[in-house]
Length: 122
Image (cartoon, rainbow, N blue to C red; front, side):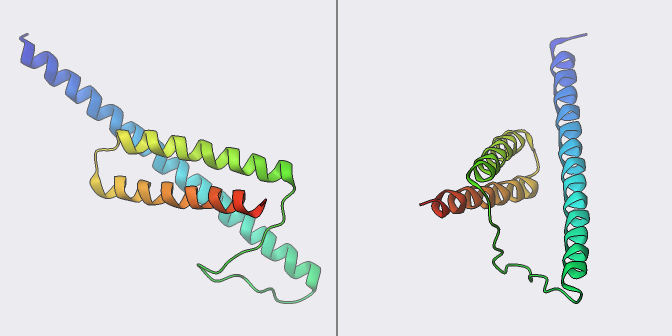
């Protein structure tokens, strides 16, 4: 076995690790999206039951108002910051340019959420 074979094997294992990592985060994103859909569906059904009629579901891109206590807001900021840190790791490890761009867009979106949460307290 020569030196080129060793480096070749290292490259293979590094690529394999990236593939597993990408798949893990895609699976995790799908699970989170599914949970959000389920929660939204339950919230919509609960609101209909409470109102006894139809509910107005915000259209995509429409502002949504949420009332949070200070501890809830702080927790949400912490969770979003953690998500940003995870996104940055994922950006560094991904080898696909289009997926990297998607991750960076999500990172910017998460940062804008934090900015809004912080300005809401001022």
